[in-house]
Image (cartoon, rainbow, N blue to C red; front, side, top):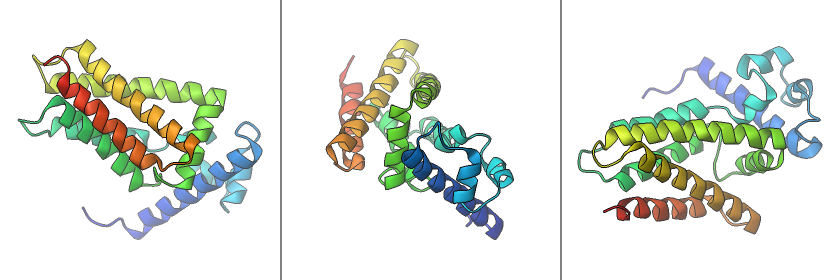
Length: 202
């Protein structure tokens, strides 16, 4: 894949600056109390520039979700013919995490920790997170079911995907609460859940 051009790199830097300013203001002042105008000023851009990159302040916290899901769906579609359900599901989750780490959001960094604290503590954001999680789980489960006809039905695929997503969230929250690196806890959750996927029903 070719390197992004100057215009695209500038766009990525602006998006990252807006996101960083937003996260820090949300933590310092509160999510509901922070305005788009304040975020734009902290990022040294105009409100119009903010809206060129994000339609709402909520969107800053959920940016790139569709792109990350597409990465996971591609892993499932392009799986090796002899790969097991657990192997494919684990690879899809790891691909999503790697895409986060390579993009504007760093799963192991301070900003991602701040984002997760906000998503878990602000009622309106918690509700939005759950809604998006349900949509992600539904699409992943349908793709996984289609990838393993005769081995998975819709219910079992949904159980496996939901179990892994739940394990990832629980591991990440617990690691943050205990001051441990989230990446190691997330990897442990993937290992455990994917072994269970290959061990159950066989």
